[in-house]
Length: 121
Image 1: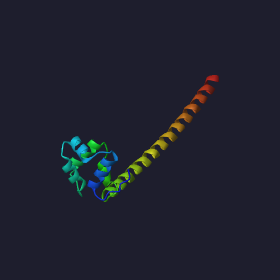
Image 2: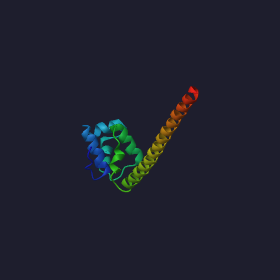
Image 3: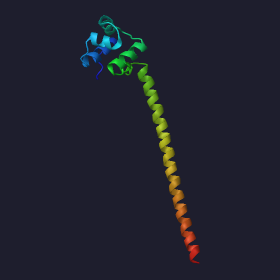
Image 4: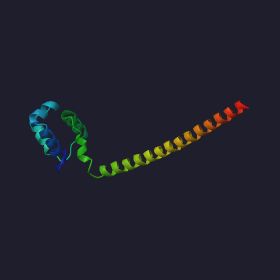
């Protein structure tokens, strides 16, 4: 879902409305009043425990609201770079392993040929 909300409260409201949930419906899911849900929709910030509870009730990762916000986006980009570097390193190691296996297979084949020649004499 495209995030058009200016606040995390508006984001929760967008997700709830996209699921055709009224404040009273969402309130029942998390055992609170529709007025409390309406108040949540107006918030600029939401406690992480409440955001987790709402995420479960809506079956949606509401923390994704922050994915394109600093410093989260910077952290994610750094993490991606780190994993890409690790992946490149592992791919290089796999390439070296393949080269070594090829060399070993060639050596075994050469030894077989030598043994075969020795067996003929």
